[in-house]
Amino acid sequence: MKQHSASANFESLFNPISPEEISDNVFTLVGKILPVITAGTPEHYNSMTGSGGGLGLLFKKPVTWCAMRSDRYTLELIEKEQTYTMSYFPKEYKEQILFLGSKSGRESIKMEEVQLTSIQTPSGNVSFEEARLIIECRLTQITMPDPDDFYTQEARDYLKEAYKSPNDYRKYVFGEITHVWEKKEV
Image 1 (cartoon, rainbow, N blue to C red):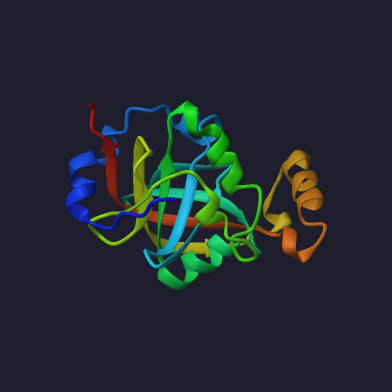
Image 2 (cartoon, one colour; image 1 turned 135 degrees about the vertical axis):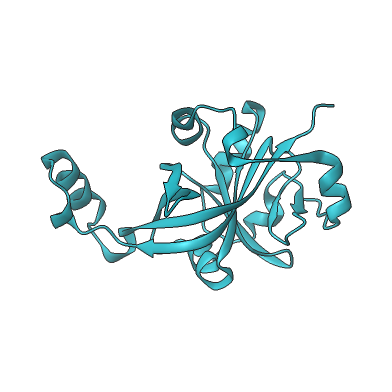
């Protein structure tokens, strides 16, 4: 993987847009285009494939939220740095996106193996040159769902199945959207 860190390079590739200007359907972004969630510093970061979550408003601010297993290394880095990116890629990068979800960055060198080019945003977060949409977030809250808070049997059954061991516990991660970047047309 090639690394770049100059924000001037970043700004030659991406345009800033407001959260309201995101043209993708939220259900497509969340359900069909798997985001790559990245946290850490340019010197040490980790990415994972997201699968579920949303975008909306919380306390009158634009936010993202996602569910993450409590043992994810990326979650540990989000807690430490309190910022992260959610990056969305064109379809031709699906194999690389799935690769990022195939093993832990804690026990591997997957960030060196992935065939994506890291890039630093002007605010110091890490994403990838190949992304078509980057959402930067500041951590707002991490919470864990309580099965007693769910009223449908389907939701309770899902949580019961998902929480077979403590490592499987899911945490809900909420982040205020601080910047949105869209790839410039070539």
